[in-house]
Amino acid sequence: MNKENVIASLSDRETQLIQWVSKGYSRSEIAEKMSMSVHTYDAYRKNIRIKLQIKNQADWARILTQLD
Image 1 (cartoon, one colour):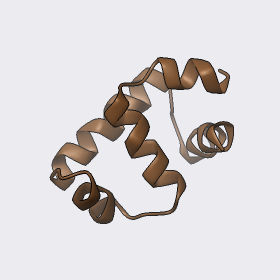
Image 2 (cartoon, helix red, strand yellow):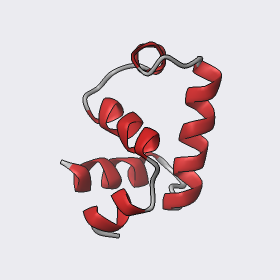
Image 3 (tube, helix red, strand yellow):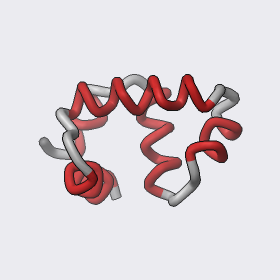
């Protein structure tokens, strides 16, 4: 999946969350910056994993690398 396909498959909030993750912010820091609870953060991450078929940390690394 290329960068354009990754971004097109995500909502604006999901894309924003991934951008914060790629910058190295923690779960609680991202939740605070996005004005959401950590439970909502977890739900967004779950939706991202499903949409992008992320099964493990290697898949996360691949996606984050593609978005740089």
